[in-house]
Image 1 (cartoon, helix red, strand yellow):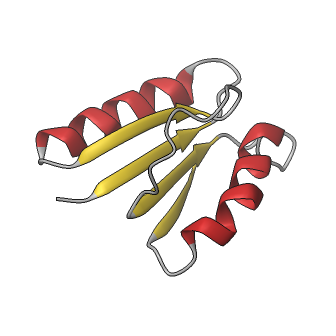
Image 2 (cartoon, helix red, strand yellow):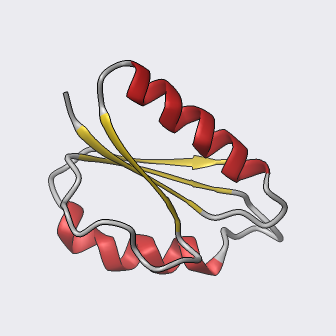
Image 3 (tube, helix red, strand yellow):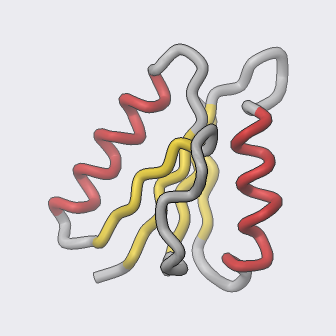
Length: 87
């Protein structure tokens, strides 16, 4: 199955809860999932085959750490499936 990175940013913890449940569900389906809170240093140096970005909108924008992670990861994730879930 696929190596999937679930990267999230959370302000009040709700997005973390959704990211944890999503990661668990993907793992149940046989995927190798890495869960990463973008406010922390990256947890893995292994490139994912797919990326799921999750963050809440506050005052019309996502958290800064999620935006930084997306900009930094974009060159590495080019050509791979990437999805953004706004909570």
